[in-house]
Amino acid sequence: MPATSPAHPERRRRRTNRFFAVAAGVVTVGALAAAALPGAAAAGEDHSKGGHWPGRYQDVQLLSFNDLHGNLEPPAGSSGRVTEHQHDGTTKTIDAGGVEYLATHLRQAREGEKYSITAAGGDMVGASPLISGLFHDEPTIEALNKLDLDVTSVGNHEFDEGAKELARLQNGGCHPKDGCYSDQTFQGADFPYLAANVLDEKTKKPILKPYWVWKKKDVKVGFIGVTLEGTPDIVSAEGVKGLSFKDEVETINKYAKVLQRQGVKSIVALIHEGGFPASTSYNYDCDAPGAGDGISGPIVDIAKNITPQVDALVTGHTHNAYVCTIDDPAGKPRMVTSAASFGRLYTDTTLTYDRRTGDIARTAVKSANHVVTRDVPKAPDMTELISKWNTLAAPIGNRAIGHISGDIGNTGTESPLGDLIADAQLAHGKQLDPETDLALMNPGGIRAPLTYAAKAGEGDGVVTYAEGFTVQPFANTVNLQDFTGAQLIQVLKEQVTGPNAAAPKVLQVSSGLTYTLDLTKSGADRVVTDSIKLNGTAIDPAATYRVATNSFLAGGGDGFPTLGQGTNDVVGADDLTALEQYLTANSSATNPLAPPKADRIAIVK
Image 1 (spheres, rainbow, N blue to C red):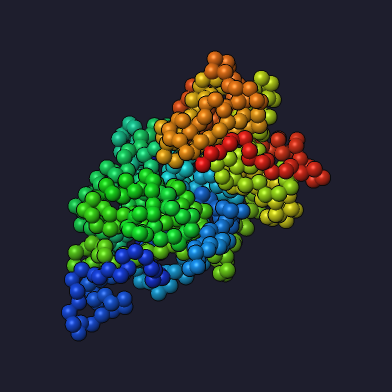
Image 2: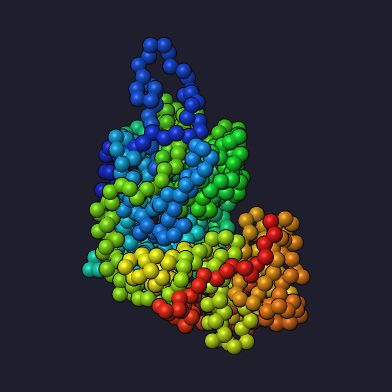
């Protein structure tokens, strides 16, 4: 997969022409907004819009979003809402998301802006709802082309189906197994995917372009794209086979020098790694009381070490919303943004380009997140796209697979939907081997809630195949393995140690497995060993237990290396089939399934 040989050069030329057209914008409010431009204007000097000197300073609008995950239609439940902080200290929730609305918001934001760029922070595809996932995310690439996305970094989910499939999404062509879905060959992305820190193990070169430069007249802005170095820990081994993932900071610093040598001094890093703001409100001020005080997580250390040559960081991965300033190594504030996930927000950042230096006047950078509300007109081209793909998906997606009596949520340390899925995998495991004892499910594999309200006319409480697919889109198989009791205890401790120490990944557990998670303690002690019981009996370290997991966990994924050490493997059906079988067997229109109580893990805070 050469990094520099773009397919469809005729489309690339048409795309380039668009870069030089009048594009887009909204004046935003954020940290640094009040700071003065370098070199105060002389008295009586003519000023242009915004107080900038005509000719020297040029505002460049940067619109950005991240972690779309193929959510073309408005996401369901809490996945389709954002929280907004009010002036009186209260919060309210706002319905948000859907590319019909995202397209309208972006197009409105670009109006009147002569210099506008749209960029993304990875995970545009992967873990997608049925309308996109069923077709290997071709619909999402088509939608992003219509959104006039200019550039994106890769994220970990871009590797769900491996590097060859990612190359197909970039360059086009029919799927090698499923073929074409219409009489027209899939054309691929009009925008470059950047993968600066993802190398082919044989050639030691990036598998896709490491950087890209946006140009209009004499204004040049370079973009470097990376995904988190830990991608192999959270993607199936097959998806990252033959690839190596390098340090984010070292890679960005390397290519910043390359861009500088090419005369590109204004640089934005697109980083598929993120942070954790102290509030879930999208408009929370994470620069209070001081710059960057309200954010933690991996992006903080990354931001503090990326060369000052980089002027702004567009981030993602954690699905959180923030607009923060974090000091660079020279102690100079630098904007770091993330627009939550699923197309619910977009970030509008103003970069003030100094023609004299070719660099961004960093003291004039302004940024804010905006809600993709659903009170604007739908973009007709997106409505047409969704209709086209829904028509193809309908025969499969509309089939009823179960009935529920209320919403079954996927949030919380232990979630009702996590319990349900674990129970479904235990039931499937017992079909494969009656001696199966328990099941464990990774929370990151549960992508959406099951909602009671009808979504597409199927009737309240009806669970369709499409809804099930949205919950579990990865096509992981249900695997059985033998573990000693000591190994099982170690697995539970790995939830809060090693790679999961800073951000615990609490496995969802099947009925019968109970224990106490004491979050007032630190390290492995947070899992209270003496409390771990199966059907009321303490786990025997010397005994053997038959455990069902999905194939991702069975390979040691998500920072659970012990789960990769099981023996006596048996591979069953895919996890969605297990969920479908469980719902069909345990629910009906007259006797719907009640949401589980999520009371298997006793949590001490």
